[in-house]
Structure formats: C-alpha cells, structure tokens
View: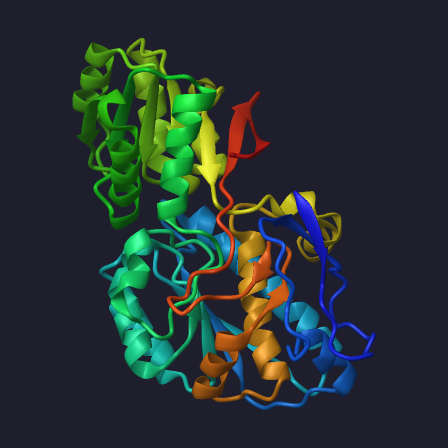
Length: 390
C-alpha cells in the first residue's frame, strides 16, 4: 500500500487531527493548492452554530455491526474536529435504518426535516440507498456513502451522491480475477441473497466468469434452511463458491455447506467482512476468502492509534476508515464556512485531499478516484489481509 501525506493549505502548520499519512492509496494524484481542509480551520479558529452531520445505516439488526463500524469512524472525525474547534461544535445525528429499504424513506424525510444536518455519512447499504437517495437528492442534502457499492447507484443522475470507495463494477471483476487466477478454479458456483447489493455483485461475478459458472441459486436470508442451494452446489461439485450477501446469513450458509460435505473454497464480498461471519460459521469459516474495496484502516498506525484511544480495546473495522474520510470531507466544508446544504454540496464538487484510505476526490457521477480491490482470508478465526488484488 502506498502512503500519501495529508495536504496543507499555505504555510499553516497547526492541525486539528494527527493523521498524517494515508494507507491503501490506489492512485498517485495530488490535490489542488486551493483546497481548504479542516486542518486549516483549526488554525483559523472556526466558528459555527447549530450544524450537524448524520449517520444513516444499520445500528441494529442482522447487519448492525457494519453500521456500527461506520458510525465509529464518523464519530472519531467529529470528535477530533470539535476538540480542535471549541467555537464550532458539530453534532452527529444517528438514523438507525436496520439496513431495511422499507424504513429508509421515512428516516430520510426525518433527516431532511432537521435543518441543522448539512450532510449524510451513508446510507450504508445499497438497498436503502436506492430507496432514500432520491429524497436526499430532491432536498439537496449531500451524502457520502462509505459502503454502498451497487454499481447502478450512480446511474440515477443524483447530484448529491458521492461514494468513498470503489463500486461493484470494480469489486466484481476483482473477485472473478481472484477466483480464476489465484484460486485457479475451473468450476464455480454462485449464490446470492436476492438483495440490491448481493444479487448485483453476484451477477457481475457470474457475467465475468462466464462458462466457468456451473451452478447458481438465490436464498432467502431470513430462512434458516438453505438446503436447496446447498444440494445444488454439492451436485455441481465446484472448486469455488461465491456468495453475494451479508455476514449473518453467510455464516449459516458456510456451516450448512461444510456440514453437507461441500469442500469448495468459499468466497465472499465486502458485506461478509465482519467477525459476525466467523461467529456464525464457526470452524466452517476458516479458509474463506473475503474481498472489499475498503482499505484496511488498522494498517495506518496513526489512524489506528486514534481509533483505539477513542474506543479503548478496539481497532478500526470494515468501512470505519472510509466513514472517517467521508466525515472529514463534510467537516472541511464546514471549516471553509459552508454552513448551508447548497454550499456543502458545491464544496464537495471541488474537494481534493488525502484521506486515510486514498486520495478523496469525486468525478461528475460521484465516484471516488481509485479502483483498488483487496483480498482477505479467514485464518484461525481471524480476518487477515492478503493485500491488493492485481
């Protein structure tokens, strides 16, 4: 992983945050000299009144762990900013969607009605993004999702949409490359959970692998028994099985596959990159491959140290670093004096600064620069990094 130094404006050397290096950088671009960062704000003495950003995603439910990771990353950024700027105390408002698209519209309207909220860190998941983002767009309330990777989200001409990591149009081919090249799997099975995220990612993997896919199926993630899909995979005897979905049901699926005698290498996308998968699968999780376009935040020593200081005994988990970068972009807008939604949205259009995951700048569709896909492996009950998929 390359490292890039956080940019400063002019000769101001006082910083509100200690993070000085970016991990997992997947491009070599540098930012404009005109960028105003939150570091500049600390030196200038920012003042503001009644301003907030919001977290939007699951804090409870089957995918709650992923949302908690995101909320923690945003919380760290806000806490650092508030400590450095006593005259500008930014709030962090929570909207717990439970990852449920059906709940997303009402929560989005609630966020929109709170005029103190200048930006949304989220929505966390692709299904709720599809349901809520049109409302945020109509209200002109900017959002930066640190985790919703469905490739079609940026096809809607939403002016408020921004993504802090590469989408599934990058992750899907990366997964297929790992399966075909690194695992050398000649026969592949593909299963999905029929969700916006899971099916979308699984379809890209299937299309990319082509004739190598010998069996495919969908499951109901709320069901307890996945025997139909398990039987289909056992009959096809694939070398590898990819599952598109989230960690809770992935754990159940892995256990049922292993109990049925299926020995294929199990491969998953970013929605499974959580200790909850290992807890649910038990020994069946060992050897699993998990991919993510998210960086390993724990590999950045300064960021990891600050995270552990804020949350004793914990280290950055999936999407936490991306959420930190997203919150930092909103805080930089506030530092630059943008205290209305239109101003924040305009600011993001020209934002170009080094984050802890990559250089953070967006194209006209809201996609962040860079297309890195990382592989991880479950080894002895822990998720360990295997590095960049080339």
